[in-house]
Each structure stands twice: as C-alpha cells, then as structure tokens.
Amino acid sequence: MFDKTLSDNRNPDTLPDDIASLLIPMAERPWLIPNLVVAEVIPLRHPDRPGHGPEWLLGWMHWREQELPLLSFEKLNESGPVHIGPQARIAILHSVSGACRFYAMVVQGIPRLLRVTPGAPREEPGDIGPAAAMNVQMGGDLAVIPDLDAVEKAVAGLQAGQRR
Image 1 (cartoon, rainbow, N blue to C red):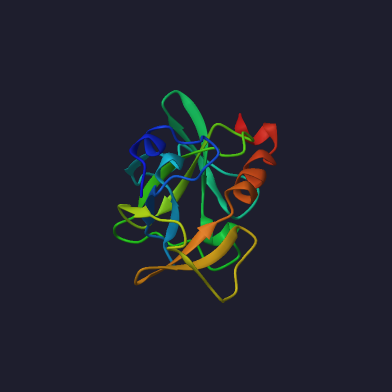
Image 2: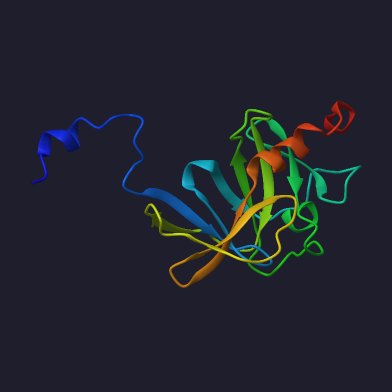
C-alpha cells in the first residue's frame, strides 16, 4: 500500500514523476527540452550587429542589457541551411553548462508545453548532427533532444573580439 508520508518526504536524489518540457518548432524536427532552459521567447528581429565567424552565428543582439549571440541550430548541427519561416521567433536560452549565461536561437514558432514522464520519450534511430543528442518519439511527435553542452561549448568558443 502506498504510504502518503513517503510521497511528502521524497529523497532529493530521486527523479520527479514528470518534467515540465517544451516542444519547440524548428526547421526540421522540433526540440524537446525542459522548460527551465527557456528564459523567454521573443518576436523575430534582425541582429543588432552582424556575426563574423562561423556560419551558425547569425549575429549579436541586445537582450536585457546583455549582448547575446543569435544562432542557427540547423547550421550548427550541420543539418541544413538557415531557415526563417513565417512564424519564426527567437528563444533566449539559459546555459545548462555554465559556459555562458544566455544565448539566442532562431525557432520556427511558439513552443508547446508538455509533461514528460520517465520512459515516455523513446529513442528513434536516425542520423544526428554534432549539436543533437538523440532523436526521440514523444507520443505521436518526433523530436530531437539537442546536445546543449555542445551548443554552449560552441558559443563559449566565440572569440572575445566578436563580442565587442
């Protein structure tokens, strides 16, 4: 029989029953990421200044008194050209590795909130690029879990001169 006192005194090392996540439209498969990674989704706009360097760096933009790199996941993941669709937005992402505080990514629409339970996403076979961790199926949705450590490593590798 389930003991109510056990559920109220959870071990902090155990996994939660579910994780609030976002399914974010991208040019190819949508991203599946925890919602805590996304600081804000803002309307699409041109970068405040161009990016000089890798093709995936679309430019630099000001957000809340910070200068953030604006990235193309498709270019970073070597999976296709930069795509700016009619519903495109910019997602401001928190760093998960600490390599940077925030960075911006072009997304193709408004994210959809969903709850992910343990074992719910099933790994799907298929090619992934250097910025993707795996392809998954979540219910009826095919998605990609991005390798945020790899993305942030690329962002951290931008030369200090590009930030000024």
